[in-house]
Amino acid sequence: MKHDFIDRYSRLQSPVHDLDPRAKTLALFALIIACVLTPPGSWYSFCIYAGVVLIIAVASNVPMSYLLTRMLVVLPFVLAVAIFVPFMHPGGPTVDLGPVSVSREGLLVLWGVTIKALISVSCLILLSSTTHFNDLMHGLERMRVPRFFTVVSAFMYRYLFIIVDEAERMKRARDSRNFQGRWIWQAKVIGHMVASLFLRSQERAERVYQAMTARGFDGHFPRTVELRMRAADYFFMAVVIAIAAGGRVVAIWA
Image (cartoon, one colour):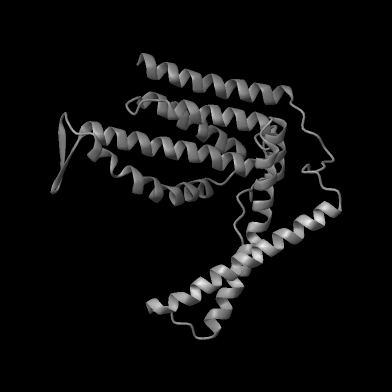
């Protein structure tokens, strides 16, 4: 079965891929924080943030079509929440949109929420696309992120695809029996499938835990190569953080 891994382009060769996961994580999260703290009307600051994301994307050799597709997947969920924002900011000049009128301030807030979400999601996509998932988890562990979080995330990512495969097999078996999910009382079949999938996942988790405990697993995944920060990593991190801080200064003084 075909799966769409979040780190499908993490094995490409580029200057961004060669950077230490810690440098990319700190730099991109600094950019996200600066973007989130920027007022909606700071157009120049958002252009600066978007420019940094674009430069990193071009340097990483990650296909722009992949980046745009992932952004468009998230956009409907952002708009589903942000679409109500203009109606929560009454007052000031209004703009007529057919039968309804919204304030310009509300539209500005809507724009701010949308552009912040897109830039933040782009940073996360670039981070996952240029860093193998295991390296990312190891980098977070080296940054003193709680080991419980990294271990649970690692297992979740590994076994999520197995659970998806099992769910697809159950769906094919259901459809082969001429299932017609048109009536409300047939929802019982869906409920049985969900319950069965949950129980199978729980049993698999217990077997995996017992097997790893028997092999002396202590919550730490051994690695053959340890991460080391180089001059290029510090340079990348310093430049991105400086640009993010510059964007905030522009937002304050513009």
